[in-house]
Image (cartoon, rainbow, N blue to C red):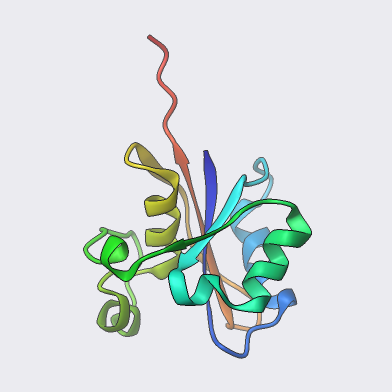
Length: 125
């Protein structure tokens, strides 16, 4: 499953989240779900984006985010959520135990939102 982890400031708009998501996806295939920390996942801007994309909006608990190793590091996010990147950790946690990060955290043009993409690794046996 391909999941976009989204981090955002309280004042972020739908355009902010869409921009971060578009930057993370690039030319790749669309995502099948959006994920963020549980309290952020209940924000209307996050839920509205998921509804507009017709995909699930998933909340990840702080306990599940804490300790997830991320490629990018923010001291503020580390102090608040226990991981270096909310977007990367949420994507990895929501995509499942075999997930790998395929797009590291990117920032929206207005610096109000971040996005990262994780996918489960498919194995052929």
